[in-house]
Length: 451
Image (tube, rainbow, N blue to C red; front, side, top):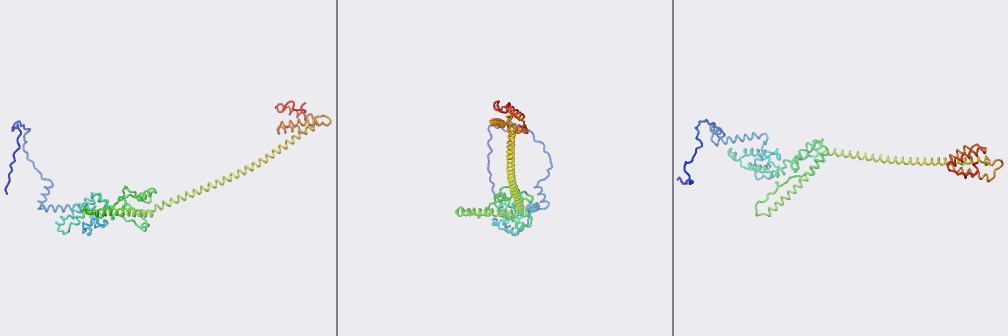
C-alpha cells in the first residue's frame, strides 16, 4: 500500500525575531533520581488475576460478570427476593398493559417487588431492575446456551420505564387492584377484631388521598371527636385516582383523525364512569364500616342517654315549676283569703269598737246631761223653767261638740256619781276654762256653765 506524504510549511516567523537573542534561562534541569515504582490499581490487579489463573481477557470478564451477579443477588436477597412465576417468565412483552391485578402483567411482580408495590422506593426499583437485568439479559442467556427469547427482558425494561416515570407509575398505581385490601364481611366483623380487619382496608385506600396524612381509624379508646373527624374525612374523600392506564390506545397516524378523536372521547367517558363507580364503591365501604363500628353505637347510646337525661331533667324542671306555680297560687289564694278574713275581722272589730265607742259616747253624753239634770240645771229650789233647761243643755251640747271621745269619757268619769249642783258645776267650769285656754271656746260662748 502506497504511503501519501503531505508537506506542511512551518508558520512564518514574526519580524524582528533574532533566534536565541535575548533568551534567559530561569533554572537548570536537576540531576536524575532512580525510584522504585510499585504496580497498583484495578488494571494491574486484573492483569495479575489473568496471569495467576491463566485466563484470557474474555474468560476473565465472563467469570467476573458471573461473580458480580452473584454478589448483587446476595446483597438483595434479604429485601428484593421473591420466587419467579413460570407464567410470568413466559409473558409476552405486548401484554404489558393487560389486567394489572394479573401477575403476568403486573410491573411490580416483573421486578420482584410484589410485597412493596406502591410503597417501593426509587432506590428499590433501581436495585430490582439491576438484579433482573443481570439475571435475564439476552447476552448472558445466549452465553449460557439458553434458547429463550428476550420477551421477559423486554417486560423488565417496560416495567422499569413505567415505574421510574412518576406520571406513568401513578397511573399504574391508580388501577393496581393487587394492592387493594378487600373489606371484611359483616359476619367476619361481628366476630370481633373490627380495628384489625378494617385498618388495612383504609390504609390501602389512603394512598389515593390528595390530603396527607390521612386520619387513622383509631381504636376503642378514640374520642368521639376523633371518630367523627375520621368518618367526615372519608365521606368527603378527595381522591387523585385516575384511570388513564386503562385507556384504549389512541391511533398515532395522522390520516385517521376522526377515529383518534372518537377514541379520545370514548376514553374520557370511560374514565368518568370508572371515577363515579369508584366514588360510589368507596362510599359503600365507608357506610359498611360506619354501620359495624361499635364506637358509633356506643356514642349514639351515650347521646340517647344524654338526651333522655336532659329530657327527664327538663320534665322534672317543668314539673317543679308547675308545682311551684301551683304552690305559689295556693299561697296567694290562702294569703288573699287570710287577708280578706283578717280585713273582715278587723272590719267587724272596728265596727264593734266603733259601735262600742259610739255607745260609750252616748252613755257619756247621758252622764253629762244627767249630771245637770240631777243638779236641777243649776236652778236652785223648785223646778227649772224650760228656758233654763234649754240654756244649760245647749251649753252642755256645745262642750260635747268641742271635745273628743277620750275627753268626753274623762269628763263623764269626773261627773259620774256627783249629785250636788256645786260639784257638777265646778267640774263643768274647769272643763270650760280648759277649752277656752286651748282656744276651742270663746269667753261669751257659755251662758250657764260659768259663774
